[in-house]
Image 1 (cartoon, rainbow, N blue to C red):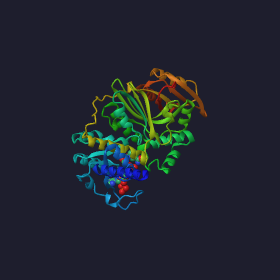
Image 2 (tube, rainbow, N blue to C red):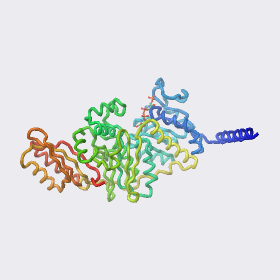
Image 3 (tube, rainbow, N blue to C red):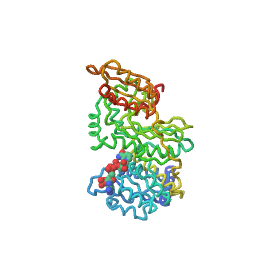
Image 4 (cartoon, rainbow, N blue to C red):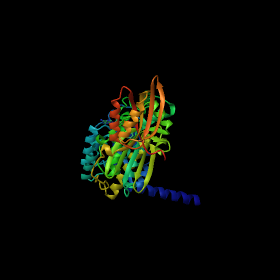
Amino acid sequence: MKQVKERRDDQTASDEEREDEQDLRQINIGLLGLGTVGTGVFRLIEQHQDDLQKQTGCKISVQKILIQNVAKERHIHVDEHLLTTDPNELIKDPDIDVIVEVMGGISNTKTYIAQALNEKKHVVTANKDLIALHGGELLTLASENECDLFYEASVAGGIPILRALVEGFSSDRVTKIIGILNGTTNYMLSKMSKDGLEYEDCLKQAQNLGYAEADPTSDVEGLDAARKIAILGTLGFHTELSLEEVDVRGISSVSKKDIDYGKEFGYELKLLATADRKNNEIELEVQPTFIPKTHPLAHVNDAFNAVFVQGEAMGETMFYGPGAGELPTATAVTSDLVTVVKNIKLGVNGRGTVAPYRLKKFKRKDNRYHRYFIRLIVEDEPGVLAVITQSLAQQNISVSKMVQKHYKEQQAEIVIITHEAAQQSFENWEKEMNLYSEKIEFASYYAVEGDDSR
Ligand SMILES: NC(=O)c1ccc[n+]([C@@H]2O[C@H](COP(=O)([O-])OP(=O)(O)OC[C@H]3O[C@@H](n4cnc5c(N)ncnc54)[C@H](OP(=O)(O)O)[C@@H]3O)[C@@H](O)[C@H]2O)c1
């Protein structure tokens, strides 16, 4: 008897659930792209539909997917009627509420997103290249059309760092953001450090494993990280910053020897992307940088990403996680989608974005301070060291540590770690050393982040 009653209760509950489901509003999605990230988004929407419905009160349904090659074999079962090669079937379809852009590229994609916003469709994108170049313009268009435009997945894949900056730090003033934002270069530098490999061997390994592209320029020359720090700086400092305003230096000239010397001083070499704001003046840069092994960023290895944020009130916080990959990136995209759907239910789309409101002023080189690691190969004869140190003193650069080792016949290798010095002074000193190029070869230099007392 009790069993029958329980069965009846179950029956009633599932009938109620079915009725609830029928009452749910359906939000229709147009997916631009079904590659690595698109496949992940499609999977999450299908597999997590129950949770998504409970959180948003809406049924989320992918109605059309734009691809370029219909004959391509897919790693996921998708009803073939959903696939199209005609963008208008998504962008012009009045039944589609949200466009999720995960196809990449700039020119076509910008056109599609602009058209979608003008059609009053909300947009979620994972496209850092597009946002770094045209984010300001597209956000204005979104706001004019009372639409949402979210791009959490464009920086540090699965780490919810944009939301943390916009919401978590809204009551604070962010003074510094330091990121390890490119998985490929972090993988390569970790390998060089751990396995003692040279740059070229690491690059080949990264390419074989699919971490690095056949043309790795964007990653190894720091452009990918530069795009991402421009996005983080814009949100963190409420100031519109662009890729061209980032000073960029990549890792292609890093040698195993530099990494080994750094280790002797207790440092690890990382490609750091930094946005710094002091006295309302901003500094934006990407460069290979030595950090003390005691700094939490020194322990971010392989293809992982991390973002270290300093706030005036908060102090230091660090976010760590996968910077790419199908499901981590798809999680960020789908979370943005959840926010869009919640906003649709509340009728508040396009009202959450705060346009950058602070004036933009950059630090001059005589007001940018770094510690430096310098490696020189010099003639091993009296007077050479004096030339180096006197010239450093003239530029007001003081030495924190120094080692000299035999290099080869009649030559020595000198590594100097300086205290904080103005970038302008360092560049003046470098120029002066070039006057002595017969006796002093400037082999390499890197910035050093933080002090050694951490
Ligand atoms: N992969 C990651 O881990 C990751 C992480 C963070 C951000 N992102 C960003 O996410 C976006 C997508 O990356 P992904 O790795 O998923 O790329 P992907 O694997 O190359 O997939 C691209 C998809 O878009 C379609 N597509 C490309 N160009 C098209 C065009 N002109 N017209 C129609 N369809 C087109 C492709 O169609 P076919 O399938 O027919 O070729 C494919 O389905 C990029 O902006 C990327 O920067 C990726």
